[in-house]
Length: 467
Image (cartoon, rainbow, N blue to C red; front, top):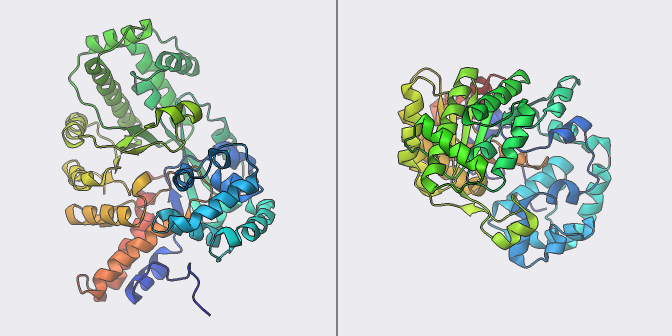
């Protein structure tokens, strides 16, 4: 009988990698410190009913692959029946070989449903029906899906205007998995975006402040930071093309904000001045509250304007951008550090050409006050795959200390995405195991190398975030 595709030593290429994974990494709990899961679903312990609802709906990774294969949008985001959508995805899967979707798909079927058959057109109907029976049971509810992967903490992402009512209600339940939130105020920063003034009005209502000036805006944001903090928030997150750093004065920023409220057009210079000022204010406030700040840099979003106008953002029309990062990021972090207001910081890079830039940048601001204070975040979005994560770990190892790395996160909207932690852990163990085999790391120090693996898998994040 041939070996199953997903087996105990999947991606582990020698005995040292196997020992590291099985003895030091595999059974560590998961701290998923950044994702986009709906807390309402966790609160209500949602039952999905079938794989399309839990696996395909909302997953723009799969959507892009299906579109590339020529699948009609009706079977992707349209009104086709759930099983018909799934059949189109199953038809696509064999064509995803060498894309991480192929590995993720089969890991997820194995880990959640004990399905080890390869997904294709022939197996699709049987797999759909078998998993639908399970997904209609409370045993496969949101919370039980999290339990199946040994999740200890999940940190969702919310806008400043969010009431956090679902997080508040979750804290009153007996759920043993901690659910927290991260503050995502990008809509208040990106003053050049359409709908900015309307958003500011919504923010003012949430903060109970009539925002008529830049100072009012800062007061409203600070109020919401305090509110999030009172509700257990320990992190913020920003998804930006790049960090802005353009000189400004307070009076200039007041004038820029007033112009925007009146509906006047802003120059690119004014937009960058405002973004610099408000982000510096936010980061200083995060430091005051002792939060961890995250910067996801380098995405070029909403490239297909026609489809974006039909389907909206986060539907599969983004790519890697080619933005200059080093100089402005350095100046921005230096400004905060010079005032002793640089909090713990994680920088995620989307352009692999900038890996070494980010790996060396974090070393500039690790000042000895905290272990791994400034982190080079794990491979993100288009880079959370075998090649991308390996390159990130190699850059971090060569130019920093991978032993201080806080490891993987899902950054996902799917409750079935958590085997990405396993995927990362297997790649980490294989990377180190290969170097032990080649004599580049001492096999006599297996216990110490195992400790490093356990730290990266779990303990570094647990210490870093201190939830």
